[in-house]
Structure formats: C-alpha cells, structure tokens
Amino acid sequence: MRRIALTTGLAVTMLALGVGRAPAYEAVAVTDGGTLSGTVKFAGTPPAPGKIEVSKDPEVCGKDKVKPDLLVGSDGGIANVVVVVKASKGKKLEVPAQNPVFDQKTCEFHPHVLAFPAGSTIDVINSDGILHNIHTTSTVNPSQNQAQPKFKPKIQLKVEKAEWPIKVQCDAHGWMSGFWISEETPYVAVTDATGSFKIADLPAGDYEVEIWQETLGKKTEKVSIKAKDDTKVAWEMSKS
Ligand SMILES: [Cu+2]
Image (cartoon, rainbow, N blue to C red):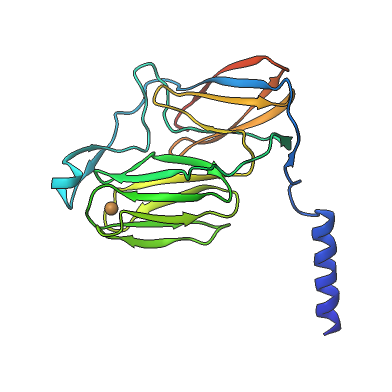
C-alpha cells in the first residue's frame, strides 16, 4: 500500500510540475497580431486522381467518384492540407456557438477534413436518407461508432480533447473517409481547393508550423510573424 501511495504521490507531483508533458497553451490578449497566409502546392506532376468503385447504393452514391485522398488543383494547389502553427500562447480558443457540421452526402463526407476547437460538439448530418455509420478512430479521445439510419438525420458527437488526425470512416460504405482535427490552439487552418489558407491574430514571433496531408505525410516549416503584418508563404509537398 505504501509503495502505491508513494508512486501515486510522485505521479501527481510530476503532473503538477508538468514533467513529461508539453507546456499548456496560454490564452493572452493579442493586440497588433500578424497574419500567416499562403499556399501549399504539389511539387512536380501530381498523380492522376484515384477512382472509387461504388459497390453499394449507386442510385444515391453515384457511379463515378474521385478519391478525395489527394486533390490537386489546376495550378498545383493541394486541398485539405492541415496547417498548424505551434503557438504556446495567443488568443483564447473558443468552442464555436454554432456546432461544426459534418455531412454525409452522395456517400462522401463534407468537408473531407473538418477542423474545430477541442470540446466542440459535431453535428453529424445524414443528407442521403440511407444507412450510414459514423466510425472514428481515436487514440486520445474515445473512438466513436454509431449507425445513422434514415430516421436519424442528425447525431451529435462531442470531442473533448485535442487530437489530430482522427480518421473517420463509414462501415456501410468502405470508400467513405474523412478526418477530424480537434485543435489545441486557434491557429489551425485547412487549405481550400486552390491550396490556400490564412491564419490571423498571431502574436509576433518565430514559429514552427506543421503541415500534414493524408497521403503526403507531415512536414515542418518555420515562419517569422511580425506585428500587424501579413507573412506570405509558398510551401510545397511531394510524394516521398
Ligand atoms: Cu455510408
């Protein structure tokens, strides 16, 4: 018993000192913040988009579907790249007043990559009127797995803790895939169809920025943010 008490005491002390943990994010007032904006483009010739074989419900899902795992626009911009500024302090991370929406439509997840503050409740919508099944694979949060038949047009799933990427799949349609990004700071963006992104209100300073794409992996970039200034970047990713 004494050993257990000692061990527990040590663990509590280590937690209190923050030993072995990343420093917690500190919310501060940001005045004269700077902006980081730019593009993430594919270096070289991108591979032809993959095709999805629709093996079920083609009347709702459609027949010719493009795999969403690597979408490169005509100017090389990569969609759905997650951009995370590794900030230790900055503006307060607010859970949105309106729940983020994750829709299942023509047997695809919209958006393909959904970023939201940790603690958000996600409105999972079934616009198709057929059976879908929302299945998340988490390591920090509990994984969630719920059937969503026609008579349940909306279910709500809360994600308490910061974690990314959380893979989301549908067990009824094996090709359906998406990702949730549960944010620890407000300085996260997902690139649009042209590969563009913008992150505002950053305190001036030097930062590491992680960029991640599901088939291209993770890369770290460095930026300097100046007060009231827009730092523009043109980053590239490629198949390794
Ligand atoms: Cu489905």
